[in-house]
Image (cartoon, rainbow, N blue to C red; front, side, top):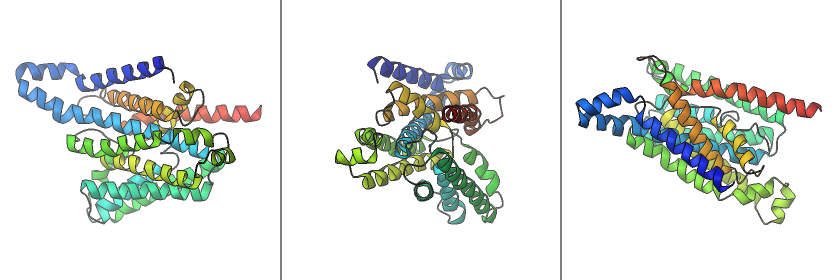
Length: 322
């Protein structure tokens, strides 16, 4: 990726972060003018954690999506379409509502185990370099199964209000999170992105074929295990705090590969920057809802990402038909 593109992505991300902190500005300006301490508290306790979560969650979805797409050699692979986010949500629900581990560590452990189980099941069903149809069918099956089991877990929960408590979290939300929760999600997310980026050369070699990658001295079995585990840890930690949010991990790597001239490994860092920007922009869109109404961020990303996904499928079908 060129230096100009890197600077452009960085500048756009900084601008979106500043807007996320400042908007809506009218209410914040009134607070700062009337009670400066209260206004600063709103910035520090409400808006800053929300902005940090948007950055870290979007970044890890973008980076994980780029790694998963490179692993499966398929542009349709992403954490949500492969069942990773659904598995993470299922694990967190079981941990919190059935096993009673509702603390941050319990939720995170359940989400990571659920995401890991979903990715391992996908590898078993679809294979290591699955065709488009096989990958989609396997991913949809895992997502549907995870969704059904999540509903069953909520129905069997001791609390009769489990469905109402989990609705906003399952739809994805960055609202009313603390700085501690933001740090709890951001630290594994940043570590995941850093470790995934270290495999950039291996993934670029894998794009040339398994034999070529092995000739360069890469252990493909170990590479696959590490990528699956890293994606599960990073995405699972964020799902445990913010809930399941889709389509960022699909869209960001596709744009990133255009900036890296089709190199899947080099696209990991640009995908993280694009994913963070998209998530922050989607969070800004949620704020246009009428006062007193909550618009889940997962709904916004789905409304924006679903048409893109359909266009991508039609485009791939058209290419195959030529």
